[in-house]
Length: 246
Image (tube, rainbow, N blue to C red; front, side, top):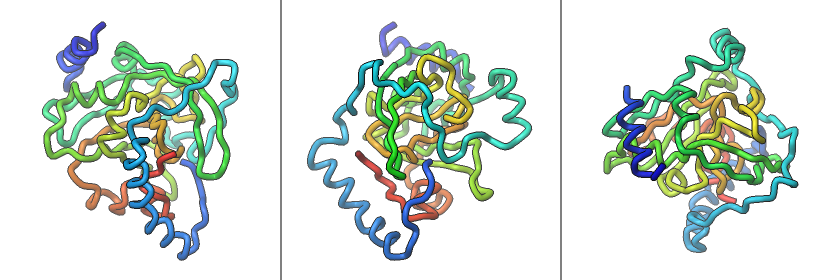
């Protein structure tokens, strides 16, 4: 199926972390000061649009590690998990012309990208996995981004310390061909510990940017008024860089 026709079908038919780094005040200030420089350096070097390395199947870690939230501790999630997520919905909204409400079956029926990439955690460990799902750019193009949209916010079902997890990226990463909404890992449905039924894969950034238990994708003009205003759960609380490029 051609890309443009796939987008048309989608629009017509489907309408409707990683844990701790150093948390001292000096380290928080250092991270904050370094954030803009880090993103700027990647832009200058042209790495923002480069493809992340992809690996042979022989290098896949078959027992891919879970980290951060490993489940969603609510009766609703447990019921969905037990039944295979028949009623899970992914809402695509915000600054778009046509909001979308997609079931897991809708997402499985879309053109898929499969990629074997390395997950790098800020804690210092890495793992290689095979991920599959539709490109985020396809969903955004189907929804029709408004001109003022500058960032994409990911809403999640899991909570840490009583607050919902969330993350965000800019349009460079949103439109990157390796940025996908993953529903499969190593040839099987995404496991609970890895964010079932949906998680983001943003292969040019560290693991805490790859939001798990995904429920919403929101296009916004600014991050200033969202949660703590720094663009992500850990960015708001622990001084993590908003742009975590690798």
